[in-house]
Amino acid sequence: MTNVNTEKLSSARFAEATDAFVEVFTASVDFDKRMAQQDIQGSMAHAKMLCKIGVLTDKERDDILSGLEKISTEIAEGQFNWSVKQEDVHMNIEARLTDLIGIAGKKLHTGRSRNDQVATDIRLYLRSEVEHIAKEMTRLQRALLNLAEQEADTIMPGFTHLQVAQPITFGHHLMAWFEMLCRDQERLQDCYKRINVMPLGAAALAGTSYPIDRHMTAELLHFSRPSANSLDSVSDRDFAIEFCAAGSLIMMHLSRFSEELILWTSAQFDFIDMPDAFCTGSSIMPQKKNPDVPELVRGKSGRVTGHLISLLMLMKSQPLAYNKDNQEDKEPLFDTVDTLINCLRAFADMVPHIKPKKASMYKAAKQGFATATDLADYLVRKGMAFRDAHEVVGQAVRLGITTQRDLSELDLAELQNFSPAIGEDVFQVLSLEGSVASRKHIGGTAPDTVRQAIHTARKALKHLDADPD
Image (cartoon, rainbow, N blue to C red):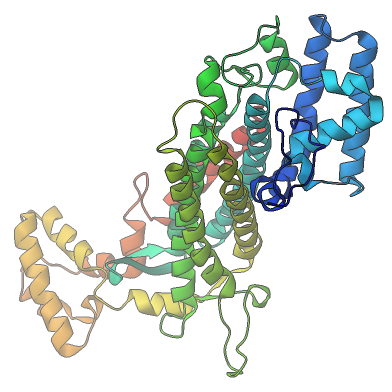
C-alpha cells in the first residue's frame, strides 16, 4: 500500500496513514462542500451556545465567529482551498479555522460530532431548498391560472383511455394540472415540518456530557425544536426519503403534463403550438420542431424516482446509529433538488407561451360522439331510466357511425325514431357549448365554474405567500 497523509484532524488513532486510493474513495468533500454555508451557519450557532454555557470565552467565541465569516467569504468568492485529505466539508472548514485563529478553532468541536453536524447541515440545506422549490412551483401554478383564465371558454375533447369521451374546456384541463401541483405543495409543506427538527447536540450517538443548551441552538438556527432521541437523530434520513418521495410525485405530475404537451404538438393532434425557445430542430429533417423540453422533463422523472429507491435501499438494512453508508445519501438528494428546480423553472417559463389551436381542438371535440352522455342525461330528465336512455343513445350513435355524422347532425325525425321523448330542445344539449355549459357544479368544466375555481385558487396562492411558514 502507498501510504499518504498524516495530517488529518482525526488521524492520531492510526499507526499508518490512509492509503491514497482509500483517501479519495472515502472522501465526500467533492459533493458535500455544497453544504458549506450551512455548516458555517451551524458552527456559528454552536459557538454562541458553547460560550453561553462557559466552554468558550467571549474572545474565543468572537474569534471563531470572525474566522468563520472569513471562511464564508473565501468560499463564496471561490478562494477556498478544498482538500481531499480533510475528507469532508466539516473537516476542511475546521482545519482552515484553526489555521486562521489557532487553538480556539480546535475548541469549536466540543460537545458535537460530525454525525450530528452533518445531519444538521443536511436539514438546513434541504429546508432552504424546499422553500426554493415551493416558489418555483407557485410560479408554475400562477402561469397555469393565467392561461386557464384566457382559455376558460376554449372547447377541446376530454379523454378516457385516450379516446374522445366528453367535451371540456382547455381552461378546465389546465386547472386539473393546477390541482396536482396543489397536492404537491401540501406534501412539501408537510415534509418541511419533519425536516425542520434539529439533531445538533446528539453528538456521535449518545449525546454529550457538556451542559449544552439545545433549545438555544435550535432557536438560533430557526428549527422548530431539538430532536428527541440522540440515536435516532444521527441515523435518521427519513426526512430525505420523504422529500424524495414528494419530489418523485412532483416529477410524475410534470411527466404527465409533458406527455400531453408532446401529444398535443404532434400533427395528429395539432392542439397547441409550443414556443420556439423551448423546442429544437432536427439535424437531418428541416421541417421538424421537436418538443425537447417536455421530453427531457418526462425522462428526468425516472431519474428522481431512482433516487428515491436508492435512498430507501441505502437505509433499509442499517443498524443504529450512524454508518458510513450514509455518506451516499447526499448525491441522490442533491440531484433530486437540482432536477426539481430546473424542471419546474422550465415549465414555469414555458407555460405562459403555449398557444392553443382552438379550431383544431373544437374539431376534435366534435369527433367521437362526445355529447352522447348529454343525450342520455336529457332522456333521463324526460323521465326515462338511465339504462334505457343508455340503450337509446347507443342506437343513435350506431346510426351516426353508419352515416358518418355527429349526433348534433342527425335530424329530429331520425332521433325520434329511437325515442318519442326527444323534442326540438335536444339540439341545445347536443352542441359542444351546451354540453360544457351544463356542467356548472363545483369541479365542473362550465366556463363560469372554471373562472370561479381560478378566482378561488388565486386567493389561496396569496394566502400561501402571506404565510410566514
